[in-house]
Image (cartoon, rainbow, N blue to C red; front, top):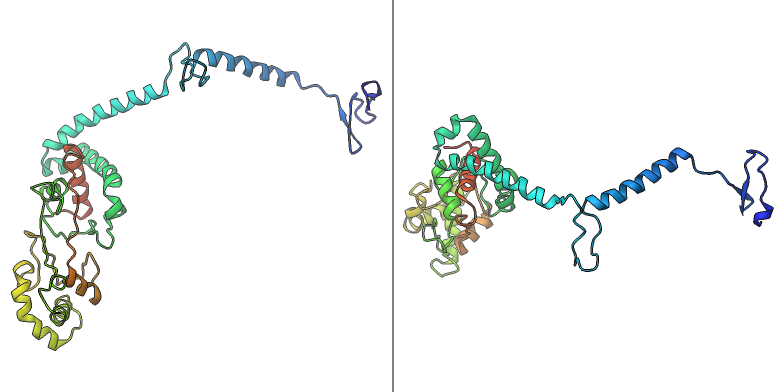
Length: 295
């Protein structure tokens, strides 16, 4: 249908455009004026925005930058300013945290809340990958949400561990404990390791082969008691775990215990001194101390 063939729709009384699809005629209804006015206003607003605000990217001669706009507005600059303001506020509170004692932190609600919030954030960023959310631990990584510690569990002791790490040999002040690999290094025979495994099972209150336990008793006194103690209660001064409880980092099944005696584990934890500032380390110590109930 051509322009001269335009008709008036019988139902609506509106002129058609002359376009027909599958027998359906298109009506020549103009857009509502209010809609047009709003559309024109948005176009004008868009032009004004491009003049005053950053808008058009990668124009010739501008490289990858956009037009700055007459206002010189920059979200990046605003974010940097806000971050600087936050860092300044945190630095003031952090300075108080570094010099405060545990008693002061516990009795100063504001300082305590700041330390816990800062410590929780730092823990999520740096520690949760190994120790799990909330310090729940995982196989090979100690649980921090209890009050069982390989080393000193006081606030100062926890801070020392975080600062210097465990077997973090780049730091001369790192905590060091070394269990011999009795099987791998040929210090004991396979039979002796089997007997010691039964002895450790007995120490932890489980069923064990009585004959093997009897054979292993002098062996334990000779090879293990110097670190774990005569009764297997462990020694935090050297990071030796208590063998009489049911807390195991690498698993407490018979095969796990045997593997530990055979090849040792001697995992390490990085020292965070130099990578985190003093305030963050102290906040982490407060947070971890609170996770385990504290000592």
